[in-house]
Length: 513
Image 1 (cartoon, one colour):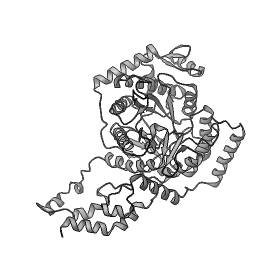
Image 2 (cartoon, helix red, strand yellow):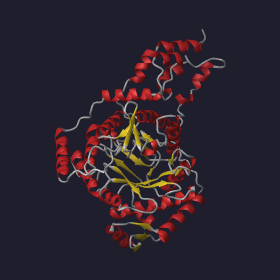
Image 3 (cartoon, one colour):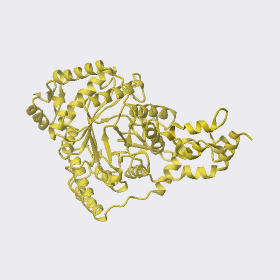
Image 4 (cartoon, one colour):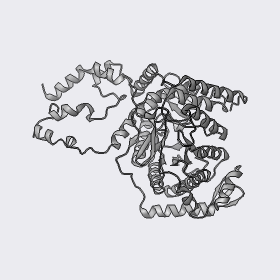
């Protein structure tokens, strides 16, 4: 019997044990990624300087709008900007001067200190999907999300090794009143998991609730302890609505981090060209980040870039495209020039199902994010149908694949053990490495191993039901929920959180819509 045949026989013989190992759900949490790779640079120095100069021209000559926010306009005027109605024009250099006080990195504290993350520098924090009104699974299909779906997602996140952050609106619980659901969502993140989380941005008062509940959870003021990183989208092109800027003001003044992120569909909300879109992204991000520093110098903030292209036939957004990758890489270079943390990327796709299209588009974006130096990767798991749907199966599939990013980010091990000169000498010409000392000492951890994908021989796979990846992921999600155990929390803290929620809910009538 050949050595390879013997190896296959032993593999089949241990199939049952491997199946048990593959399907077992283990509560492990990987540390945030520390990238040992250089950032990919798609722009030359000359190109960067042109884009930076054009962005300054946009801010000075065209300006940005701050409608329905006289406080913001007053702050800008006092800082030296030209304010004409809702239009604010920034003299060249003003935004950069203000941005200089923003920290290049910060720690977001979790209630479990082992789950705290560093944002900035060479770090990469992976956070789940954010915002979909629908959910999808193999049993119920596509449907409006509920608070039960929301809680299920938070439990899956808590159980997932490679996801570092609990996120925010992992799906929109449409069965709870709009003006009250943020309380239930925050409570779920705070009690069903112990990873870092995001606060509410749908109204300034809801941002205040997020701060107050965080103070209850942590048992102290959070003014000097960043415990939230929240998403502030710019209403592209060049408009900062009063709801988002109001939330930004609350978080900045309380030393909580904000992702200031243009939300751009290229060709609709920005030019169709990569260079033109990067110019607008830089102008918008600089204006928003500078405003955060007007609210409180030194407040933690992230340079965000959420950009996709558009299908010119249907008008639908497209994901995983080469143009989007170029914009991500270029925006990363611009963020690093400003010495700021960078947000982009995710498991983005336009597919309606967790199928081959979803996999291709997701892989394209996640790989671009890793190479592009993304520090905070929102939508890293669970995104489907252009962000309209949170998929439980795709979350499990994506979360598994995030392990690859951890492995690639480590770079190439050049230790004496990894150089393996002893193994090469031992085997020599014409041999094989299966039984050599180096292989025996290293095989358990030599290669990254998927917890979802099926590598078994055809016969074994067929005997086990011939399941596709979606079925396997669905079964794993069910096991994770069955084995979920909530992290411990002080009963007095839990009681105080519930009391705060009850008081706030009683203060105003339900509002749906």
